[in-house]
Amino acid sequence: MLLLAVVLSGVGGFLARVSPAQSINLRTGQSVQTQGMRRDGANVFARVQTAGGTVGEVSYPVANIAQIDFPEPPQLRTAGDLLGAGKASDAAAQLTPALAYYVFFRDIKGNWWVPLALLQVDAMSRLGRDREVDALAAELSRMGDVSPESLRTVKFKQAAAMNRRGEYRQALAALKPLVEDKAAPPNELGEGWLAVGSAHLALRDYKDALLAFLHVPVYVPDHALLMPAALLGSAKAYVGLVDKLHAQSALQRLVTDYPNAPEAAEARDRLQKLAAVSLQPPGS
Image (tube, rainbow, N blue to C red; front, side, top):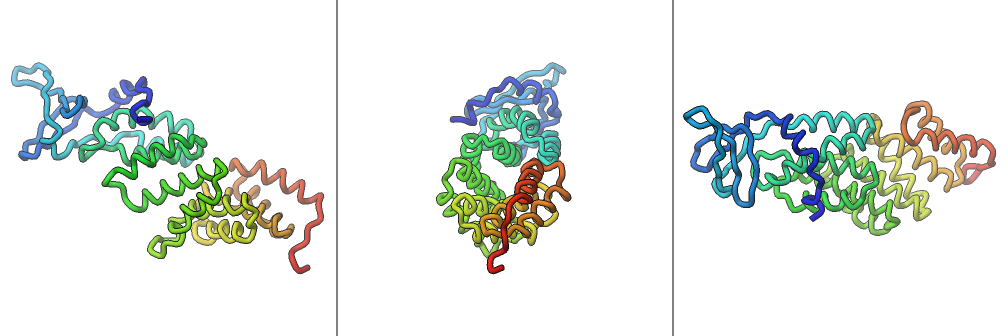
């Protein structure tokens, strides 16, 4: 399994940063304070201090464990900050050893595998590493404690991976029930509408592409990670609709409001090219 094939070279460093204050709460009601633990098959081996002051290792069957109180891993915050800064590669490097550790405890309540995996899906998606996206998504779908909102976000990223593979119609089929779900808050669907717009754009369905991209500035105008892609996509759709003025307006807004976004360089190039061609809005 791909997740279990993760290189564990960084796990030791991760464990060194994890607080030793971990408690194993047994189904009997007993709580065991440990100085670290490891998983071996159906048992968890905990390092505990004996009455004589020495440290020994005690085995606890997983079936007898109600929960393990793991400390919150610092990678949740640092990787989230890195993703917010557009540093997906650095975020993935932070998350990999943490995931490799918690993968062995993910069937025990109290572990942090799911929130870490959700961040890693985001990082892998931004890096275009679609096999990892699909593998993590499959694992998350099998977990019973993943919220519907989180699973929806994962499916958005899978659809974006389909777009990158040229599977545009498959992506649209997967996205349609998600973005049209009346129970979902519109401000949580921005990433899905981006994927819808990209698929329609690739299929040269320019009107449908534009309508999809415009959902982002309407419902999540303050989302700095989505707006540049939405503006660039809408500009391309306007060009397909032979509407030069609106295309230029979208591109200009992109380079003005998001000058450091990855899409800004392409927007500047497109602005220069548009200035040299003659396009008129439909019906003019």
